[in-house]
Image (cartoon, rainbow, N blue to C red; front, side):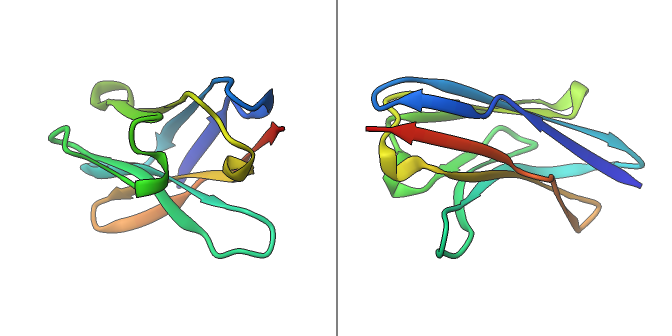
Length: 115
């Protein structure tokens, strides 16, 4: 069984910063991609950023230049550094891992940005 535990969400003022963390544990092998998605109320879940095991990254246009994804393969951990937060970044942020060609989701962590 695979578990993804996220932390680091919270309430922050516009322009502030937060750092999300996600640790994967359990029967997880051969991680190919780790990433973050988010879902705002009334909207579909969307990609925020991903990082491959080789270090290649990809970002949603809306967060480029403000968010940075990084990972520690040896610790099955992925981070999302979020700077210059905007009210439209308010959402539940989910960690997602592809390992052994299977996808796994975390439980989500709330990020709220006040104006």
